[in-house]
Image 1 (cartoon, rainbow, N blue to C red):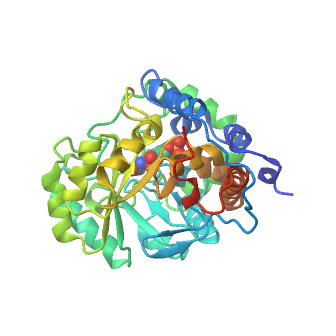
Image 2 (image 1 turned 30 degrees about the vertical axis):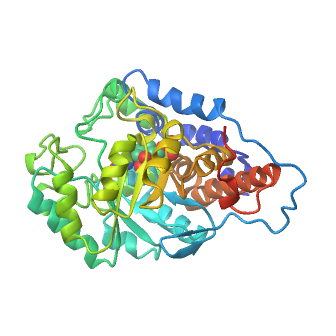
Length: 381
Ligand SMILES: Cc1cc2nc3c(=O)[nH]c(=O)nc-3n(C[C@H](O)[C@H](O)[C@H](O)COP(=O)(O)O)c2cc1C
């Protein structure tokens, strides 16, 4: 039996991930920002909220499927965009896309992925593309053309990362970009020989130090390079004007990710986007941000059926997902849970993470007296 299959929950997968990954990389994935208040609050908000069961409901034949953007899907999940997946396992982004395909759910490709959208497309999954608007808008728009040429019709515009958040542990661990050689980093990697051989040496023998595959060729630096180019820096001047411009250019669906204020959700509806993700970036950006579960009901009330509301951040149990769905989300994005599975056991581990969450969601629904995901609406207190 593959190692990850012995894991009974996401926390056990996380522990396997911790053993496999160098500490610098594990902390980068696992931790929050500054004092990690927002990360702790995510857990506290889920733990504080209750689900009210209804008794004596026949739930035989229940299912976890949903209809999202006109398609039936077996699970109310989407794999969230995560920048580091290609360092977690060799070809990590492709493995995650294959896991998404096996589960029948979409995979979101990050602007900052190591593998290009063209290569990931070969996995045959439904791909969504996540966009960070770069300072140079013409380069941003050229990237969109490249994405559209791959047949992608869903764009996730992430709007909660105007600057790089302050993550001091990355500096202590020597895990900042550029990755600079240090005794501490070298010892960290040496203590994780399976990752060294299975990921780093494979990357080095197949093209050298990885870089960000979506950056324009003239700016495609390696993660060890100290030059960072102004045109492709994160941009603190992204505004609703950019949303309007994207709306004009992008023929497919637009999802704005990283909204928490009901007024912004309303503004998104007015801007003509199809969906939003209520998210605090997994507690990784603004350290005083509210938890999505706390703001979801007000957002859903504000926008009604003018757009589709998705949510993420902090989901480690099927019951966490159930709470977001009960509070009005149509589907839930998963960031770290599939990444822990990927680290633990590659594609099989990522699939196992999804299977664990599906099983827990199904049990939660049965115990609540819900036959469908729609029945969850309003069960949360
Ligand atoms: C390692 C890592 C890298 C991430 N990179 C991105 C990214 O490139 N773009 C983005 O929009 N969100 C990114 N996120 C945020 C996720 O898309 C998602 O909002 C968050 O992980 C959800 O919380 P969860 O990890 O608790 O499920 C990243 C998250 C992690 C953990």
